[in-house]
Image (cartoon, rainbow over all chains, first blue to last red; front, top):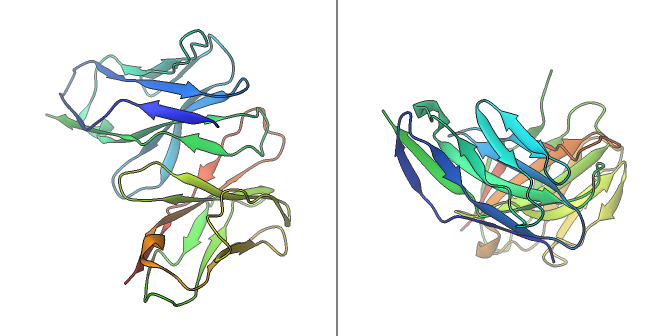
Amino acid sequence: GDSVTQMEGPVTLSEEAFLTINCTYTATGYPSLFWYVQYPGEGLQLLLKATKADDKGSNKGFEATYRKETTSFHLEKGSVQVSDSAVYFCALSEGETSGSRLTFGEGTQLTVNP
Amino acid sequence: GAGVSQTPSNKVTEKGKYVELRCDPISGHTALYWYRQSLGQGPEFLIYFQGTGAADDSGLPNDRFFAVRPEGSVSTLKIQRTERGDSAVYLCASSIRGATSNEQFFGPGTRLTVL
């Protein structure tokens, strides 16, 4: 079945440091890929997405590129802020249209210190 | 506009009891999903509704779990004879059918504790 593997956490960085959170996936077809973020005390929010190979999703300074050849969707940000402290989840969905379940990774806790 | 809402936000119950968890999706969203998130884990799919019918219930762990969506809007997740292992945060999400990408909007969750 489908699966998503994220780098083990937690991750602790200083403000303005470079961030990479690794994500690899296993899927039978051609999934859409997502990064969701969960800020303290809040619900899951979509951060960015990519629906086909070589697409780059970006939002709030975060980027991730859909790499079919390495089955990866690593999350990056050039300069993190304290407000980026949250749990980040990589996820996939087998279908492009609404109706397909999301399969999540285990999540990576990010703490950014001032 | 209003997002996905879930009630109650917290539910504490005793082993063996019956519980109901409610989800109000975003108005106009025809697809509704339930997930379960255990501590330190990512959400796991339980069931998906398209309209009033359960289109995919393959994630329900056993027959103690059941969900309904009688009018195609509000959904209720029902758990019978609760066990301590059912303790988790239950998340609801909704999306628009036919969206070009499967963007699901999540509610804040119901934290269920079975003593």
